[in-house]
Image: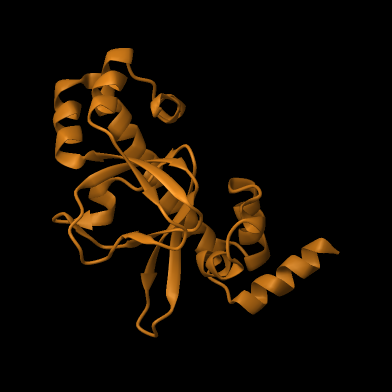
Length: 188
């Protein structure tokens, strides 16, 4: 079930996969449901088996600011990058119906201590998360809006046709009107 996700990041032994799978709970989330809420306790790690979701915050003006997108067969931001003292610092919302495999973070941490291959997998997930955040930050500071949209299209092919454009505009750091204009220019 989660072996393909793990193998795509950092392969581990069949026994380690079985140990992780023995502790997994499957959860179905409905489209538009916020399944991790900012300022609420959260102590799970998440494998996104099916669907699309986003992380976001509400700015002081009450607007949603999209931080990241997650597509099926991937890992949602690890606990220690999205919580402080097991309290979530971000919201996570399903943009389509979503199927998750969850595991208690303390149990996963115990497995990382006991199994070198699981520890290496976990560390690779953390490195990838950090790398994606830094790359996005650099892009926001150094690329034009058009270049950011083209990069988004490379990173998330076909996502543009599956999720609200307001979320994409927010992720790119532009207004929805600007996104619409840039899309029109690129279509010509």
